[in-house]
Length: 580
Image 1: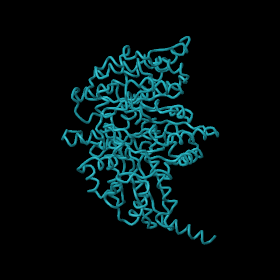
Image 2: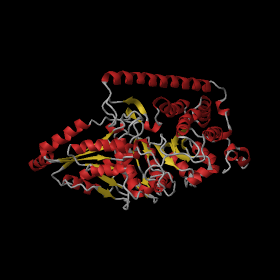
Image 3: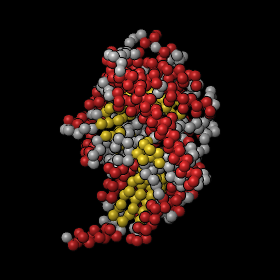
Image 4: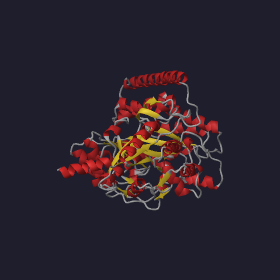
């Protein structure tokens, strides 16, 4: 007993502190985008945290070293760098232990913020490493180092490319020994996920997201070739998946913390070769009494995979995100998204509705043939002929790591140099048929076009026929429309109650005087949330009118009608575009 106590005392004298930070990015005024409650959890942070806790349990730095892991998501937590630096330095000075600061899951639009944070920690003589899709995508696809990566190396900041499973031990050992390498490149070694540590975040972290939803990747890799996608060039095109046992253990661990709502972050869960075993295990867990809810992402061919949609619904999938991208075959072909065939859209969407699953569709604005007029026409066709519930829009963006970006760099095309703009909400390249101003204007306009009063009422009428709760549907429609109108942010980047810290402003932007900052922030708050309140009241009045309509189950429209053989002759989906 005394020996065990002395061992614990020794361990307490030699801690190693691992600080994991998922950075946010800057808004158009240079302030960090942050919320009291953020929209969705970070699976990258959960994956790294799960690996770190497993490494700590294995005592990879020796039995005398206790690894203390802290995970922070800047989208819902302020990163107070002076306080964090004081805490880390005080611990090192007191007990001689080590530390490592990891900026994890850094996307291209988050890289400037990540680099700013990393420089502050490095200036305090703390070892720092940046990983994520921007670093990995650039190393995977570019022949020359982009200046922002070179800037990190010049500052003594290490870069990590690839996936962390099986590679964290070396990173921790190198950091503890004071010999971090400049670059850790594991892109050529995609790990097997079977038996790998599963993504996990403490309940206190999960509670900072709306809906208290956890996330995990059941697999990685996608077989398709979409030219705007970065994932296939970082995680590969071969399906690598977790076992049903691993997924069950993950769900049970989260359920013990009170979390039973999950976002499966596979870019395309339908192409996970183990989808059936995983869904059947989750179905069994639900049968045992666990009330599990799932959100997944899948492609437009899911209705052709025997049993997939039915088993997904039985496993608790209540929402599916589908990359519709366009109703123009020529645009889809140009983006190498041949798996999207517009003739399948209606059948696929109706198959999901038949099992009670809401459909979310992503749509890209800015393909080469797009014009403001054609985009407006396309939205009208979608509203009338495709039974989509929620639509979210993205500006076509050549993300570093994608084939699009690689080709434009090789061709010497001028691109936006500020990575903070690569958030699919800002124009970052020239368009052959639209000016920058026109492109940005139509992107803002399409949200109001789709979420018009008339179409909100149509979606509510459809949901009554399909058996959805109209109040819940109204909440979702509002949640996707309000952020772009009142915060000028994509709903996936939005959250509940914006936080803005006066001193957390992008370097190069002046720190505003308190007498200017706080009154303006308070006034903006009143204007934005007053407008959001009025919008919600307006939505409620639309719901009231729809609920007062007689014979709700008798409602039908063109989008709801079963697929028929003569559709190519009577639908605008085929007639409006020559390539159709």
